[in-house]
Structures are given as C-alpha cells and as structure tokens.
Amino acid sequence: MEIAVWIVTWVLAAGFVIGGALRAVLPPDQLARFGWGWAAEIPTLVKVVGVLEVAGGLGLVLPALTGILPILTPIAACCLALVMVLAIGFQVRRGGWKDIPVNVLFAAACVFVAVVRFAGV
Image 1 (cartoon, rainbow, N blue to C red):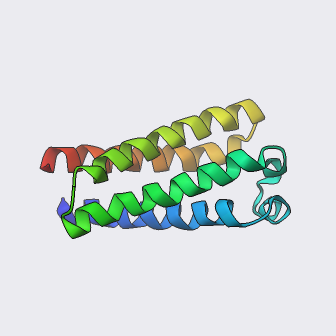
Image 2: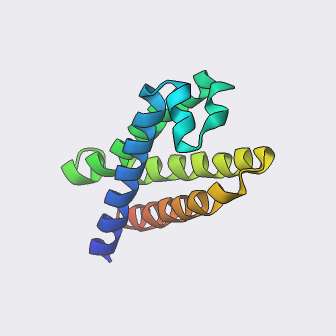
C-alpha cells in the first residue's frame, strides 16, 4: 500500500505543481490555448488558484518525504480535494462538462492519499 500511495502522491504533486505553475505564470491569452479561455474573465482568481495548487502539490510530497510535520501531507490532500470539488462546481456552472472527469479523478486520488496518510500518522 505504501508504494501505491507514493505513486499516487507523486502523480498528483506533478499534476498540481505543473498545472498550478502554468496558471500562476502564463497570461490569460496563453492559457486560452490550453482550453482555459475563461481565464481572461477572472485572471486574479486563476493566479491565486495556481499558487495554491503549487503550494498544495509541494505539501503533498515534502512533509512525508522529509518527515518534518508529516501531518501536513494529508491536510494538503484534503485541501486539494476541496479545490477539485470547487472546480467541479465551477465547471458545472460554466458548462465545461469535459473537464469534470479529470477533476473527479484528482479529487478521489487526493481523498485516497489523505485517508492513507491520516491512518499512518
């Protein structure tokens, strides 16, 4: 189980750090190329969410890897699951149905990491 949770954790961390960094750094017109044309309507929110995703992605890995405050790993996983649930609500409001399965998958993976890590702390 430990190997499985680490694999899921690293995949999630990579997804959140890369996706968050793109949202935090790229201007809205370039984000439109990724299918995020709506980013121009709410650029500040996109930047804030991007920074939070980068921080959360790092929070998934660093505390468990270093052993320093490992309780932060499942907390980061819970926070990122919440971000994904909010993203699902956002996509439903905007009619972005094609992105919802990815958000559900990421939310479920975050819950998996949180449950396993909380059990081990």
